[in-house]
Image (spheres, rainbow, N blue to C red):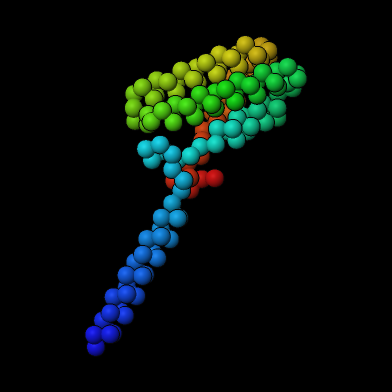
Length: 139
């Protein structure tokens, strides 16, 4: 009878440990203080692709738009790595400043006609610019 109890406890403990390991490995990758990892380079690529699809950009415009989106992504990454979270007022202010600077740069690059179209399609652009959180089941 004692052997049966030892085997039962050993099996139960093993299943518990195995379950814990499986659960831990199934969690999405996390960044600083519980923030999901965000690939800002991938977001910048989709933003530049959106501009290419919606506008007839010159070679110079494409390069400038690519550069400002990459720079903006790097600034966002640095902000997240600083340890601030979206709940911090300082985080929201700094992220807002990055967005304002990005939009100001776009206004300098686009022609008046392109800018008019951009303003009309801005909501579409904003949607592709938002990082998709793995916690919400998006890809």
